[in-house]
Amino acid sequence: MTSGGGLGRLRRQAGRVLATMKGDLDSVVERDPAARSKVEVAFLYPGVHAVWSHRVAHALWHRGAYFPARALSQTMRFITNIEIHPAAELGPRLFIDHGAGVVIGETAVVGSDVTIYHGVTLGGTSLSHGKRHPTVGDRVTVGAGAKVLGNLTVGDDSRIGANAVLVRSVQDHSVVVGVPGQVIAHGTSPEPDTKPKQDTPTAPDPLGLAVATLLTRVQELEAHVHGSGHHTHEHGPHMRASGEWELDADAIDYVI
Image (cartoon, rainbow, N blue to C red; front, side):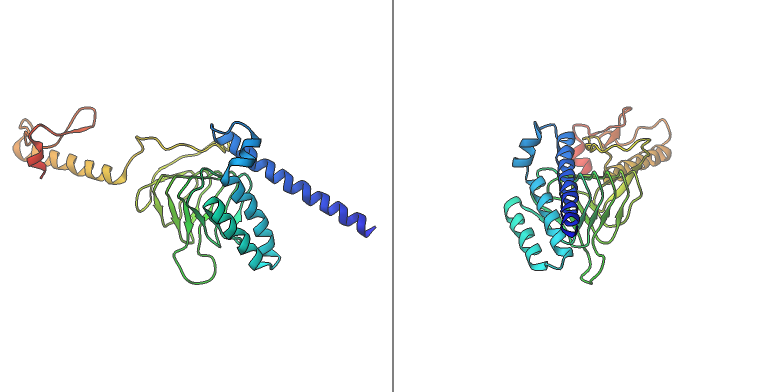
């Protein structure tokens, strides 16, 4: 009776493991246009290998087998160039695209259906014990080279732009860009969407917006001082009707 119950538990555990692996493969096929088949993904995607090995290392860690868990994670770091601490908690259907240079710290928590691109760090800013790494919500996309640092929370359905450095918590549906990371938009999704939203070349730049605002203000002040009908510096930067700033032929000397 006992052996039969033990066999049943093993079968259930094996079923859960296979279901999780299938979900990981499905997530890649859904989000990566370059993925042609699940077989290709299973054998050739280092991000998948890193996630699968982490699930084994995580189980070993929670059973007190700390050295084997770290040995496995460091071996996969050497093979895949992706470093995930065995104690980190990764949700289902995580997709690490390309994977090169990804680092996920010990107390990091990653939700379900998250997409992480290469060069991303989920790191800590404290040397003290306890929670010191980020908690990333469900369906979050973290762009290439982004750094999410400290014991903070990234809300569900948020997007962290490429090379952004986020050091504070953000709400659900936030779009974050810049250094340090600034929230440039909020939104709501009527239905969960697991597909990553790609950053566009026209995504707002907080620093650029600030400079444009200052230049606009200077232009308005000069017009006010010299009269509304008087043109500002002929060779200075001026804004077109389209909202783009333009430099005249001799504007280099003016700007310098």
